[in-house]
Length: 96
Image: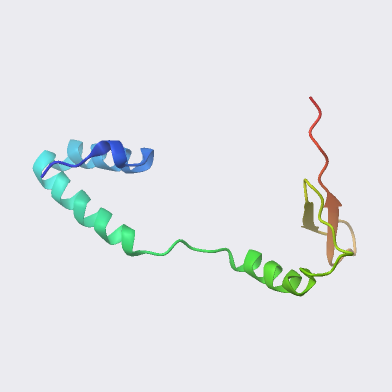
């Protein structure tokens, strides 16, 4: 069974060539096609922290006072002795 390598990602091609080198072309193609079929069934994982941030800010969507700007903001944990909570900083346009 021939596998169309033009539709594969770089990582998938690396996996296929490694399989072909280790176990041979025929068995590798069969194993890779089974692996690829199983991979397409998986849903992409979403970041649970990012999901919670979106949920927390979702009630502010219609608020005209909240403007995230063109480049947005970066939210980080506060650093330093005795610091707790979060710090938000505005992302600036990169200088050229």
